Amino acid sequence: MRNIVVVDAPSNLGLRPPAPGTVPGCYKLAGAMRERGILRRLGAFEGGVVVPPRYDRGDWQEGDGVFNAEAIAAYTVRLADRIEHHVRAGDFTVVLGGDCSIQLGAAVALRRIGRYGIAAVDGSADFRHTGNSDGIGAAGGEELALATGRGQDDLTDIEGLRPYLRDEDVRLFGMRDDDEDRAEFRDLKISNATVGEIREWDPDEIARAVVTTLEVPVLDGFWVHLDADVLDPTVMPAVDSPDPGGLLPDELLALLRPLVNSPRCVGLNLTIYDPDLDPAGTAGDLLADLLVAAFAES
Image 1 (cartoon, one colour):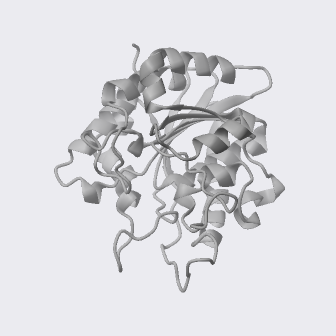
Image 2 (cartoon, one colour):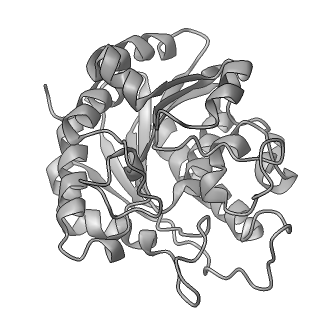
């Protein structure tokens, strides 16, 4: 049995303000999960908090590249240091975000160690880059592109490690069926499965099949990126982009279990849930329950 260690990464640096003069509330995710007893329920050890820089876009304007880039790059290195320590120790690291830009911390940490894959369970591909979009700016919608070496150097080539992830080592789950990135992924041969395909093939079966492609000698292991917006907004409205057509809780659980219980899976990060958008707390309760159940014996 590996030790589970919980690390807080409460950064919201990668998202646009939800309204003028406000900041994204996803930085409260970690606290909300802890309030629901996540350490005790997972039987986890305390990994502490990696405190992010202040959210401040300054005089950033459209066309200036990724906002908060300097702060994100600095935070990525500090978060990578913490994750690297636990992965080298043989711990399973659960990182509570935060927005999706925190995934760069895991990507850099694992790139320092060796060659790792990623199973990204996300309602969108987060693959926006200058080659396919004019709307570059929010790293939280670009982190997979950045991790695979697409984007500005200060975020894609930290410590000279570009790319942190190879295209062929990426597995995507949970994009909506009409996602526009699919054509590009087909050309790049990046493995992906939409919600409709997951349902057609059965979540457990597709997850087990994908795990076999990540449990190969060429890879030292893999990481799971879990974005709450993979769930349908009827059960998870507390995200910045609640797009219809997402997975239902039982489907997500069936998908997650084979991933996190693989001996080659070294950690997971949880992102995007915003307690400010969940006044009754029901979405947070669901998310905590799903995370705990994923690690339980089926």
